[in-house]
Length: 117
Image (cartoon, rainbow, N blue to C red; front, side, top):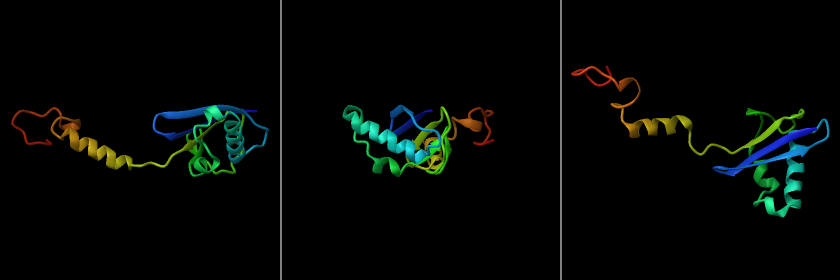
């Protein structure tokens, strides 16, 4: 049965590999097989080790799953890095940099009216 294993150890560097695994395999089994294959092909390993990927959150098609989750045919197993910045905080910082007078609800206001109305 074919599955796809994807991971990214740094921003904008996504690694993807197609694997043939036995029926009834778990996410952990797929990871171990993928690491073994990378170690065989030393050129494409890029410093990948089981320990570096073990700390990432596994998911299937973008939904979190436990390591013991069984995989199905054509599943896409994704190993997600933890977020460095809270998305809400990042959005607030971007909005603050743009200024409230030029964006969002406040972009078009009547002449002579107070800001935000």
